[in-house]
Amino acid sequence: MHVLVTGGAGFIGSHLVDHLLANGDSVVVVDSFYPLYPRAVKERNLASATADAGFSLVEGDIRDDNTWASLDQQRRPDAIVHLAALGGVRASLDDPVSYADVNVAGTIKVLEFARRAGVDRVVFASSSSVYGNDSASPFREDASALTPISPYGVTKRAGELLCHTFAHLYGLKIASLRIFTSYGPRQRPDLAIHKFARAMLDDNWIDVYGDGSMRRDFTYVGDTVTGISQAIEWTATGHGHEIFNLGGGQTISVSEIITLLEEVLSSKARVRHLPEQPGDVKSTWADTTKAQQVLGHSAKMEMPAGLRVFVEWLRAERNV
Image (cartoon, rainbow, N blue to C red; front, side):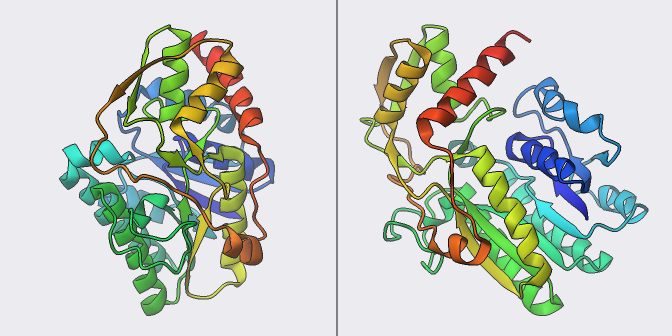
């Protein structure tokens, strides 16, 4: 199988690329190396992939017609996994226009390329942020998801609706995956676990917004990638557009995460509580029934073990 992965140099994307190559698939990555964090980090993410004969890289922006024109000249992919996006709830509050441009207009470009190129298998990376604060817990895919509370969440819900429309009009088979907070090696430095661990290693303050009771359904990146791979398989036989939660199926508070990190790092956290931030949902919790029944997916990694793997990677990364 030949797979096109947008955003393939990022955290989840690079793990997916490694997984696909290990399975004998060929992969072309489209990535703009957007400077949310240093380019060298993303290049290290792809270090093992670049040595594989089945890998190729197109550096370009998904909004740019020239990017897609260059792909028209290459082998047509059997499936597309669309991970490229501006990520982060809080940053979307500061720059909602850019988020709409990349995450909505960019998604249309991806879907239009699929339609024009005759690629009928697409996996779209959505987010648990679409649920907002009004969805009943645990979150089910049939929730209305009409009240996301951040521009980021809105852009991901808009992407799902675009996927529904393209599947309806053009016969594409599309799986939209509502990914619940992934963590593990290569995690973006702006995400909580990474920020907390770095601060603790440097004996700096950890900024916690609110009283630490906010809860998240954290999902180890290996489990997320397995779910994406299973969704790719589903598109070979599925029909229309389907939404799936990819989560661990359980929640843990921010304070509990910090306690676990203290144990793994053998270090005491210095916590500074700040006001709650607008746009942050109070809790995320995935109902994983549909993903289990349709995709055969269930999370395997327990949080303490996953944190140990992450910390081992982080220590090595700091020595680079």
